[in-house]
Image (cartoon, rainbow, N blue to C red; front, side, top):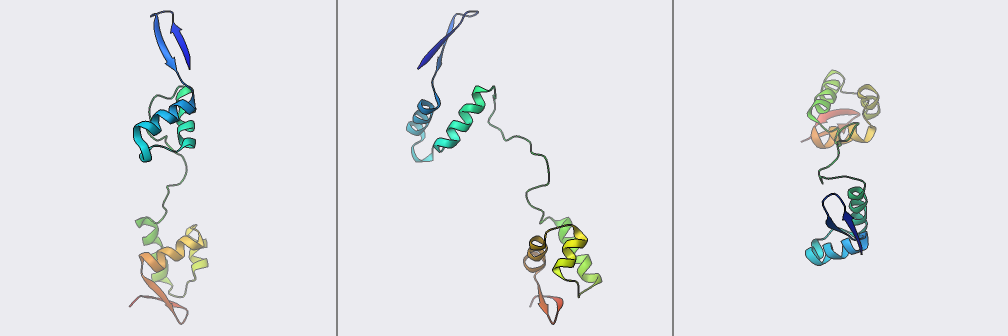
Length: 121
């Protein structure tokens, strides 16, 4: 355990290492405590000056591309050409083949009959 004295205010601060922090959290929260690796990660972040536990802003695409906009886009492509393949839908919309398949089968509830897409029954 380390102690530091702030000379400007003569306050004594208590510094403990990540292992001791984990043990204190485990003692306080029991089974609901953070994992050891998560505790070490957050310990490191706070040592570097982080003050809040809120999530960081992330750049890039959203987590789920199965949004209403993409569902409507795919539905319109299917309405205009019932014989369109999932692969063609993917290339037309810029979405992955797997995502197009999920939207068609799960969200739009469509099935393939005789190489055409029809609403499921």
